[in-house]
Image (cartoon, rainbow, N blue to C red):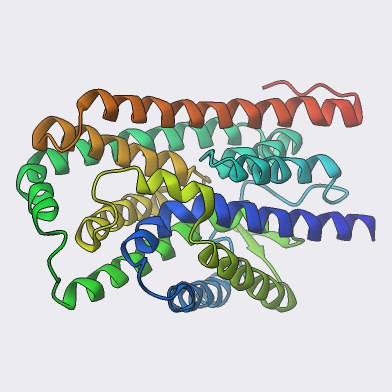
Length: 340
């Protein structure tokens, strides 16, 4: 029973902290550019997509709500321990201070380093894939906005107070739904890793499966927590989005969402190794801000560089905290020091 309680506690804390921290990367521009709409309308839209993705993943992946991202991270032998639950609690506190750390590393690192031979090398692969994600997103942000920012960003800045055609709202909501889908497929692993599941291997292919009661329970919890995030308009983390150029404009938000979604889709299809969506998001935003500063001159370059370096510092801070927790805490609990 103790193991079950810790598993549920870990899931609840991870669900709240991951949604509150990471979902704003995906839904932050949606929230900021639709700030005049009632929060519950935006919540119902996002919740509908969430439910569809969970049901789709469950039935098309033979019960695997995590879309294959837990294939390399089996359920801990002996169940979830207290040191598995500690990282999402730390994440909860970091979220309260508006620090956009990578939930993938903060939550999954302890599982990757305490799983023995079955999870050997997983952390390194996560780091490589996330680093590639940051570089690709940064390059895409630089390239795309270097080409369009002079005309695009200035057009947005000069017409931001003008009424926009209704089709821009439809386009933005469609791009948000696509991005939200891709983010959920990546980050569900950070939440569902705490819940019991069956793992089978058929012809060398690993298949993870959750049962139907787990699906129902998780869906209700996720929808409720999402409502809390929308009611608070994103909380502290939303400040990261609002501090960037023109993110409250529907057109600018649409382009950011679409580029972000396409990058996540590419990496999702690459392999089943979990990756940090936070690294991808901040890489894209960094490239975008630098290009806008250099080409369109809509903000001082020095300020843009400072923001980029500050965001990178927060990423590495979160990574260091993740590894320290994953190494020190299990050592305190078991007396066995984990080697990286």
